[in-house]
Amino acid sequence: MTYSVVARDPVTGALGVAVQSHYFSVGSAVPAALPGVGAIATQSMANVQYKPQALALLKEGLSAAEVVAALVAGDPDAAVRQVAVVDGTGRVAVHTGDGCIAEAGSRVGEGYAVQANLMAHATVWDAMAEAFESTRAEGLVPALLAALDAAEAEGGDLRGRQSAAILVVPAEGTEADRIVDLRVEDAAEPLRELRRLVRVQETYELAAEADRLAEAGDPAAARGVLLALADAAADNPELLLNAGLGLMSCGAAEQGLALVRRVVDADPRWLELLRRFPAGLAPAAPEALRRLDG
Image (tube, rainbow, N blue to C red; front, side, top):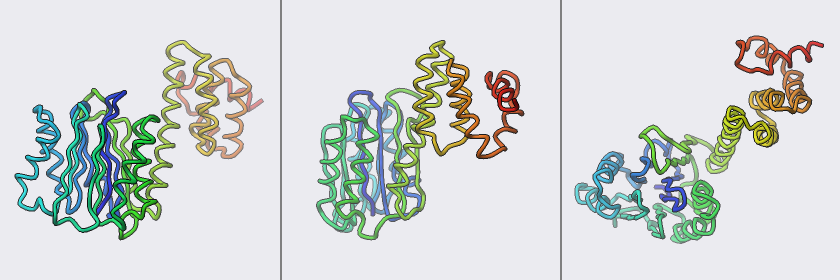
């Protein structure tokens, strides 16, 4: 009793699934994906065994359509199942059993599929598809989230809202590699919370990018990213402290010190953290301490 979207990004080759339901911890039940292999959403009396079975068959080289056919053929309860698969080349296939609770249906587009069951209206999956297509140029994550928002705007799950999840894996990598893997287990507004978590992850990605640029010997580029991080992490004291120390190390000492001072003035525990940093962990920490104490 869920709506979801599976898709492949034609530019990057990333594969993703996003889902929302009035069901506790839907992210533990519905989505699965492997880099370069494929992604699956299993729902409507979800058969969670579909996930390892589908990914194993995709690794063997079967197409999305062949995988869905095999899953359905081997399931005596296929009539109450809904499943969607996208393979590593972007081929998609769906199944909605005739025993799924109305309103239930799906729509397949180039490189993606949307599907829903127990919806308030039969217009949900078309709204999802249109939102996905109109947003996909912005990237896979925005398009997946847009599809979920469109479903909710169209009435969504007849029972209401509870949990949501998004899973995106790269075109290449190991089974452990993830671009995004976020869940909202139980919330009054799960899609709003899911978007907030995506923004938080993007902020941490800025911090990682700044570190990479600094280590690569490009302080000017690192400064630009750190300034963006300072704006994005205004309510995250740890990231704000790290941004300040990073700016001090990248030729923007006064801007960096102002950020550090802002953090420690708000909560002296961060000053104690500066004192506890091992030598070399944060090269600007000793200078920050000296100037703060002075």
